[in-house]
Image (cartoon, rainbow, N blue to C red; front, side, top):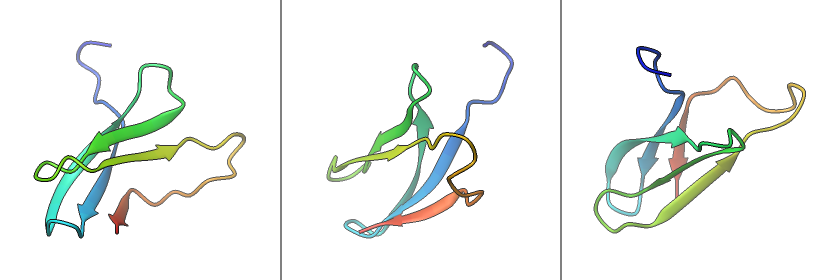
Length: 61
């Protein structure tokens, strides 16, 4: 939706020692992104019914 902030997770990619954001996919089922240096793909699925976490920053190893 225009004007609305896009949901994201902050990811520290330890493979290349770099931080980036990954954004929720169009279906709303997962956060998907790539390391900006080596293009390693990461996906974090969205849980159902509050079974996930409130944490917004993660380390990808």
